[in-house]
Image 1 (cartoon, rainbow, N blue to C red):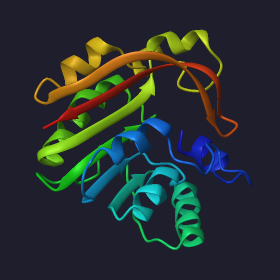
Image 2 (cartoon, one colour):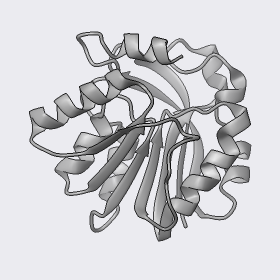
Image 3 (cartoon, helix red, strand yellow):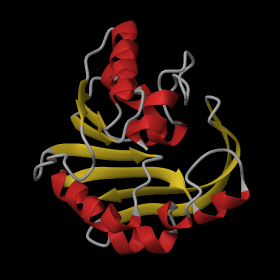
Image 4 (cartoon, rainbow, N blue to C red):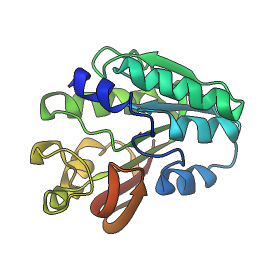
Length: 198
C-alpha cells in the first residue's frame, strides 16, 4: 500500500484537491479558539494547511513520504508551518491529553488496528477536546467516488458508537453527499459524519 500511495501523491495534480474537506472546515469553525490539532493519515496536507492558516498548531502524519513532500510544499505556498511526521498509525506516539482537536478525514483503518487506534487518539485529546470524523460509510461500495473496496474498513454508525463510547457524541449521521475533492473523491458518496467531545 505504501507504494500505491507514494505513486498517487507524485502526480502533478493534488489527489484530493487543495481545498479543505467541507465538514472539517465547518466543524473547526465551531471551536472558539485555535489550539493544538492532530491530523492522522493526512495525505497531502489540505486540511493541515487550512487549519494552520486559522492559527492552529498542526501536527499531522502519514506513512507516505510523497504525502509529506506535497504537504510541506502546500504549506510553503500558503506561508504557514505544519509539523508533518512520517509514521504509521501503530507507531505514532500520540501521548495523553495533548490535543484540543483530532480530525480523521477519510482515514480508514484495517479492522485489526481500528478500535485500538481510535482509543489511542481519544486518549490524546484534552478533556473537552473535539474529535471530528468524515469517512466513507459501508454503502459507499455502491458508488465509484473513492474509498476502500473492503467493507470492513468502511464506517457505520454502530462502529462509531462502539469505538467512541467514552466521548460525548454531539452528532453521528449517515449522509449521501456529492464529493468535489480532486479527481479521486468525485461524485455521489455515502459518508459518516461524527463529532464527539471528550
